[in-house]
Length: 270
Image (cartoon, rainbow, N blue to C red):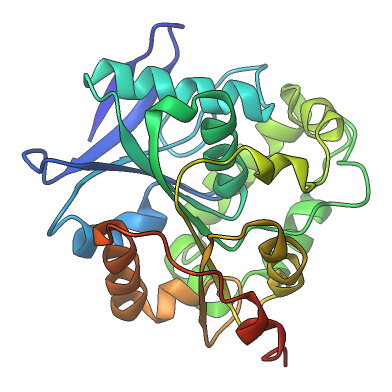
């Protein structure tokens, strides 16, 4: 791993797998996560065929902390700046949860740069405003931890040091940055957000995920979307790593756009 300085001066923690591969995939982790979400799961498998760039978003993992710039435009710009550092003009983006919104904004703002999009578990939009800056407490953090599944808890909250580090990150982001204000200015994804998507897109969801309703809401807006539904919840790829990675590789390898299989999955809602 290495700290890479962007044009803006921000330093991001980066890990590259299979640096000699011809095509590149940037993987964007979920909010309050880090690159280990992929490094310990699907990234090594995808890297058997592709150059995989993993990185910690700002103020997360080992990346530099920053007070402002938590809107999706800023995150997308940082992805592009990171690609520029490595001389990578055209690449695919893979986002998980919060990272999906960043990946989609990369396509919207820089369509000429994005080859394909993999969106794993686009989250449903937070209907209630984020906690006001300065009012995030340890109680909020413990409530967050209570929703995390056992697999994630064991890997990322497994000991007191990890728990302290995670709480420190939450405390900084919520109480000392513009994260809440920036997120409260964003809005729920709408049809027009997908009208101009030019890149092929894979929508991957767990059938029993709390986000599955979001798949049903948006997939009908993307006539060429490839849809992949796996048994499991929001973190299904942690438990179905091999099959998920192979499905992603098949999508990245494909030359033709798939036919939208919306109705197949609309009828499969559990």
